[in-house]
Image (cartoon, rainbow, N blue to C red; front, side, top):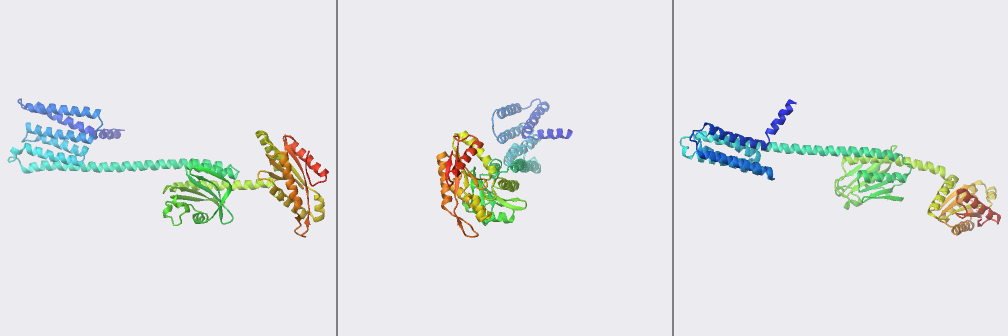
Length: 520
């Protein structure tokens, strides 16, 4: 505590404004001592100097406290007046003794300290001229060495003080810059740490998403909101020599592709996938393998997405600013890529597992379990938006006879081919399902009974007009189908009611002679 108090005291004393007023006090003390010990018949001109000193010192004090001016100019002008005052003080008192010449040694070095080397040298020159002028009549009696030494000490002191102050100022400026850089680096480190923690938390959420499209969407949100990249692409590596673009950020806007865009794997993207290491380009204009967008983009960063030791894709970020991506960006982007790879791998595995539970293994269309679930959802949607919804139930005529005649392998082939023909006859929004055995169900959203009947006829005609070929024997077989139609809400408002009604329509078609479409 004692050392700190001493340090604070000397720091306070060494400030220019405090030294300035200390010099005021010393000059004032010199006047007081002169008045105390001077001859009784002291020169009245000294009193005039004293009053002048008090006046301009007080004037500068008021002026500085009420106005905003450069302190250097104030110190220089005040020191100039002090030199003039000291000169007249020497002239009116002890010109030959020159004891008050020592006041120059206070004022002039201070000018060099507070106003700069040039100001100090100028006032040193004026002090020398003024001092020689006051002693011009006594030069013959004064020692030349004595005068030269006094003046040389004054000049040396001014130059030394100014040089030391300049060195200290440069050191202080350098230290200040170092502190600024340190603060900046500390701020960047804290920002990077916060980003890493945020990325880590966001990555944990990624692992909980089991839908690939949602994973891509959340990944783009992280890049957009946390990293702030204006351009970013998410690629998945295909088995062929291509990449699938799943989503991107373009001009700060997020874009998700329902159908992935296929791109050739070449250039730097190939380098990333083969080397399994990030690639960061500071300036694309100087890159050995610049991208096609190099005229638009200035810098680029790409990192591989690696899961279980295998590269599954690439995260690609670009910027129109040269040198936009630093080493820290590369590290954070790599952390995100690793989490994204694991999340995508989990989502793909979950999707494959889910497909195994909802897709019929033989025909590749949805199974009964998915049909019941989806029909319930579509009924709720139709109810919410006051829309129609139709259901087709299709059954192969005389299928048992076909199996008995041509074998079950051909029967399976017929089921596969029929599923394909039904899918080719309906819209993309319609859902084709294998209801069981040789029965198929088609959910037709936003479709009334009349249109559903037309679709049923289209399927019936396509089946009837095209032969089914037995690949083993080459025999062509003619087959027909019967269909039932039911529509929400006139035929029912629940899954059970619609299935019951569409079954009745199918039985009606079978009873009327098969190869037709009927509704109850």
